[in-house]
Structures are given as C-alpha cells and as structure tokens.
Amino acid sequence: MTSRESLLPSPVPGKVKARFKWEPATMSALKKCQKFLTRLTRINHMDFEFAFWQMIYLFVAPSKVYRSVYYRKQTKNRYSRDDPAFVVLLSFWFIISATGLSLVLRLPFIAFIKFLFWVVFIDCITIGLIVATLFWFIANKYLRKPTLPKEDVEWGYAFDVHLNAFFPPLIIIHVFQLFFFNVLINSDWFFARLFGNTLWYISAIYYVYITFLGYSSLPNLHRTQFILYPLVPLFFFYILTLVADINICRIIMDFYKYRVY
Image (cartoon, rainbow, N blue to C red; front, side):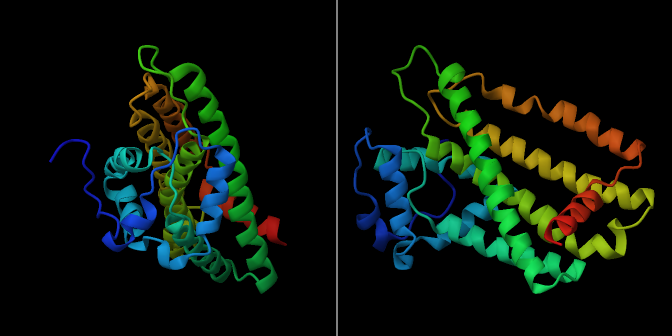
C-alpha cells in the first residue's frame, strides 16, 4: 500500500459513475457551491458510510482522512468535498449535542432552539468562514511552493478543513463533557478544574493538529508547520487556568446558558 492510498472505505461502487464526472479546473467557487447545495436534496447520492468512517478516523488517525484528497483530486480535479454526507451527519451531531446540553442545563425548548442556532451559525459557520478565509489567504499568499506550477488552494477545501477540525471538539466539549458536567466539572475542586480544562485543551489540540494536516497534505504548499505554533501558547494558557482557578468548561457552559435566556 502506498503512502497516498486511503485506508478509509472506498465510496460505494454503485455511485461512482454518477459522482466521478470530471470537472474542469476553472470551475468557479460559486458553481461548486451551487452544485454542493443541489446535492443536499439527493439523499440517495450521498455516501454516508464513507463520511461516517471519516468521522471515526478524525479521532483515531486524522492523517488517514487526508490521504483521500489525492483520490478526489485525481478523479475529480478538486480537493474540496462534493458529497454533502459529512455535513448532513455533522448536523445530526449538532442536534444531539444541543439536546444533551438542554437536558444537563434543564433548558426550555425555546432555549434549546436558540442554543442549536448559536452553535451552528455562530460557532461553526461564522467562525468557520473567518478561519477558512484567513487560512485560504495565507496559504495562497505565503505557503505555495514557488517551484511548482501555480495552483490556488480552493476556498471550499479550506472550509472542509475547518469542518474536519471542528468535529472532534464538538464531540468532546458538547457531548462527552455533558456526562461529567453536573457530577464533576461544575464544582470548585482542583480535579474538576483539571478534568474540564484538559478536555478543552485536548479539543484545541485536535483542532490545530487536524488543520495542520489539512494544509500539509497539499503537495503545492510548504512551511505549513507554522500552523502548529499556537499549541505552545495554548499549553501555557492551559497551565495558567489551572493555577488561577479558572474552570474553562464551566465558563463556556455559563456563557451558553446566558446566551439562550
């Protein structure tokens, strides 16, 4: 097996012909977006098995997820997703996390809806638009290899990287944490603070590392290791919160509760 072969399951064979139509490299970002939105209405064309395995590998071996980008580039001449299955599954996790938080904080139904909209449209989409645009600009302006033919990083791919990096923190902070919030994290013990802040720090590591993998996997980019630099100040901030008696997870939960009331 070569280093570029994906260990994730291959897309469903019966759907290959419909999905692997070659697209010109000059296809505009708007046209790609329109095509992606159109496919949201075609559930039977989505490869949910492949998207599900991507989510698993984002936890256990995130580097393997990005090996599939070579496969997509070779077959479709694009790095960004054209299958919205991952987005659909991510939407279900948003609903699950919002439901869990509403039960833990005993929020009314209206507050549940507000929290769901906040996480989707502010935490994920709005911040994602900002982060993806920033990395898209930096990658095209400063990280392209001068010796290779000019090939811009797709903005859609930059947003895909954000969604990939966003998924593990969503599960850790918005799902896994809920099982321990009332019984442990929401207290003044040092161990409670250590446990909650460690969950937050692990989530930050996942986001930064998966973002780094997303850009380092592109053959036309170099010096992508700068993306890992924020891990150093994040570590010192993590230590500072433990020393200064700051429970980050409790602060975040209080913030969400304040926003929905």
